[in-house]
Image (tube, rainbow, N blue to C red; front, side):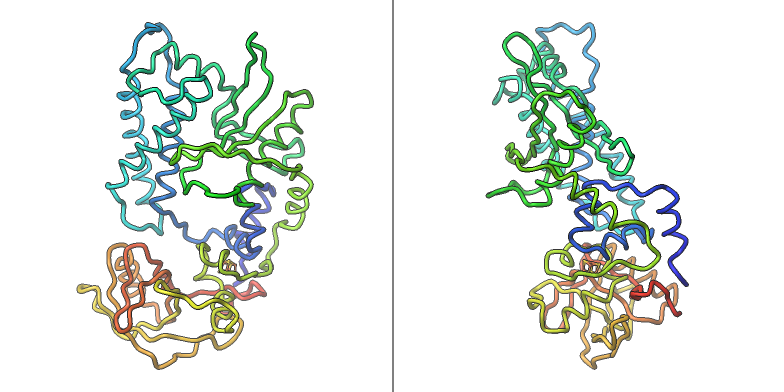
Length: 393
Ligand code: SF4
């Protein structure tokens, strides 16, 4: 069956490129193409924490302070905790509804809280109140913060509708007389704080916002683009030439297509790709001898010889590639495997559905004789989409 239904919807919606889609396209065009095929979505605890922190900061910024005593303090920790809890519960529900998810970690609450405070600290820095204890934030001070925020979660769209992005924050810089002398586009980052220069993908994303904002506002003050690392907390500015010409080129090249885009397997792209169960290229690349060896955590295509879903135990046989299309050759190498949590649920589903083909196992802890398929692992029917886009079975 051709993958026409999803590709045509992608085309009907109109082709719009966002910074994250652009990064995906640059990293591996096939990964971008697969992301448009409505395959079962995947989430992670790190992604959930990112959403929770972003949403809770949006709530704190939008808090209505009308009629409150300017001198009042001690209110911020209560508000921060309340909105964090609300967003935490909302995200937890979405997390469990996402078809591919690991275990939810309540232990991540403190991490979310610390990162929320990291974002509050970065906002305070912009009004000259860095290092202030949250308990001492007055209504007057937070009104000052609200005053410098021109937009929160604002959508940016190119006039031709081809490029689109969502800015976490747009802030104004004022001079001593209260005149706006600059704009700051800030993107909250809940991942690792960079130890050197920004990654090219992050730098490109930040400049994408900066340049689109400049393009849409012919008269504008100086615009700076900043990554706000809430774990630090730390701010890193992205500098460099405009990225819009490259973005339009990527828009042209990523037009909807029923034929899958070229696959460009690499350590970086495949390592974080959510679509390996539908792509044979990473597998052939791994077996070509050109890729670095996998270490403790491995991706594999296996046959399930026997499975005891009650005990979460199975006997699996490793497969090797037969051809470029994802055909398999059973290797004769057999291992015991222990499945846990959501990975065990996925195995149960495969058994219930009476799936007879090979199975993709992602990020398995491969010890010598027993493989541990932990809650974080992908367990999916192996259904690679051939380069023609046409499935024969
Ligand atoms: S597994 Fe690798 S080659 Fe295949 S789509 Fe993902 S990034 Fe591209």
